[in-house]
Image 1 (cartoon, rainbow, N blue to C red):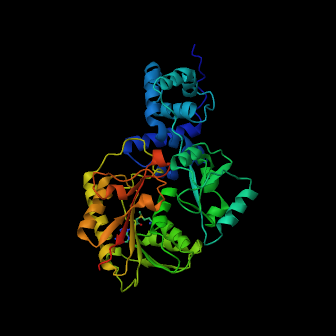
Image 2: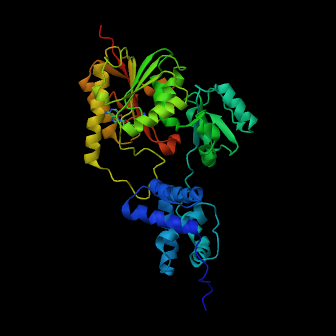
Image 3: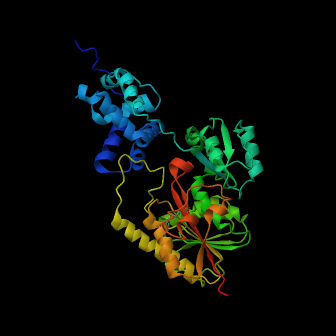
Length: 430
Ligand SMILES: C[S@@+](CC[C@H](N)C(=O)[O-])C[C@H]1O[C@@H](n2cnc3c(N)ncnc32)[C@H](O)[C@@H]1O
């Protein structure tokens, strides 16, 4: 007689997670939007198990294969098995209920663990949660006081700490601790397990704190417009970097924030208003049509154009993303047009920062190279030096005089999203 009670149902959260994962794998759809469409009440647990699968999918799949789980249980649904193994071995460490699939996977726990330990595999820890203080609405000391009152412990480090030691300190952050970032003022670093807490926080909803990955904060940090300057943000929506620039400028001066998409323009206006930006002048337009007539006296420009986005870590990946050469070629064409326009159309410009959330050279070093050829009155500044050398990853040195001056943020090494940055200065024509 079978030892399983067939009437016990698989818990809904596992069934729904398996349904989402199946659709994502078969139809190559985004897990994020599939979760969003799902009406299931426990979105948090769905999110967690699918996120852990996406981070560790190689190891999960290998463990299933090597333990013989599916070979010995041909009736076990292979996608449900991925979800259950993820939860049991990489996630919470236990499974709910006594349904047949759950019991089957439980009986394989040891074999699954052995299959993993034989490969020298280590569970991939998620990157920390970055929270930026919106200094339009409260100061850094006020924000720190708030955190202390709410029993958050600040993990301190020496001001001359090396970048490697700083990363090591982030890796050992406790769940009740936070650190100040080494590179960007006002960025706080929390354990990844606090992500949900911060996502629901009232002070995040009211824009006192901004959920913004540290890598994307480097754009305003490098652009560094002083208080009172005139800035053009050419691809501005939803406005995260516009807002950060206004913080850097202490909310004094002027920021022209250009966005061509109507829907995204509305988000830009809403966010910058709610976040207390007094100096943002939003413009609904194609940045290529904007010149000194609409935006006079521009001194600093941020170019953050549409890109492939393959560096973004909040994109759940359940299969390897294929490089799409045609799409990259098209994107790079637009990126070159916009950056080149920034370099040629504004006579008073002093500094330009170009950034993408792509790790492809076609959108990064190659765009920089082409724009320097087209605009010889610009030179690259060294991004790493601008961060007091407290950084490691730069561009590809095969691009002579280019690679070493650009910066990469790499998810596994810098514990951030994957971002590329380049900083240009207008050469004095005399
Ligand atoms: C990577 S997003 C910018 C993110 C934004 N800087 C932030 O930090 O929140 C690129 C934006 O550029 C806009 N865009 C693309 N081409 C544009 C153009 N020619 N003129 C104006 N906006 C453009 C897109 O609609 C998109 O909203």
